[in-house]
Length: 69
Image (cartoon, rainbow, N blue to C red; front, side):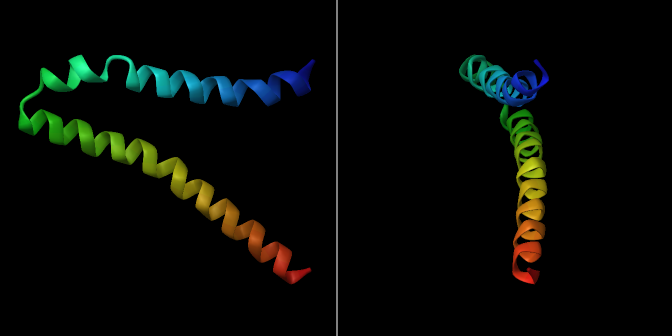
């Protein structure tokens, strides 16, 4: 049971996150003024850049371990 949950749960969470950002975005973004849009955009970039940076660090660590072998 646990292998199936651990396999699907992260994927479902990512799909849910993407859907929650994409579905209301057009109405939400068009109702903002320029300053609010800039703050929203910077927050979105931060939220997306943090896991991407974490993933990049993990990939680099993995590559270093493979080169040492």
